[in-house]
Image (cartoon, helix red, strand yellow):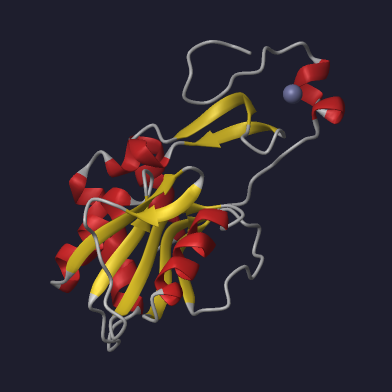
Length: 191
Ligand code: ZN
């Protein structure tokens, strides 16, 4: 997908916010990307997931797995396109686990998918979960790569779109210096 087309979709859906944001890393940023704003439109979810599936063409994939909650719709759509089943992993006492009767067989090949990857922590835990039952990871696919071009996975991975993120340490943030209130994305209250 062309970068220009992806950016048009992000703008049209209001996914790309400008302001002064407190990221989960503790850093401040003048931008925030809310992927759910894009994925609330099934036609765009389909468009991005088609890119992921296309990249793993020719691979045998028996199952798609994603970490809840962000990866759920991506997993569901990729599995629909592949004609296989979609399951998800979620935290139980802090540990990424399979619940709800979900199972992976030891001889299955599994595609791990996510919406946005920054440090890749949750995805790595899901990869370990898959390998832990003896199954094979066919690959890792995600829509947005915010890692800054770092190679974070050992298994073959693919992202539809790389997004450069401007971040500041709170004590060196020009927006703080200007006195602009900092907002935690997802909440309406300024912190
Ligand atoms: Zn700031």
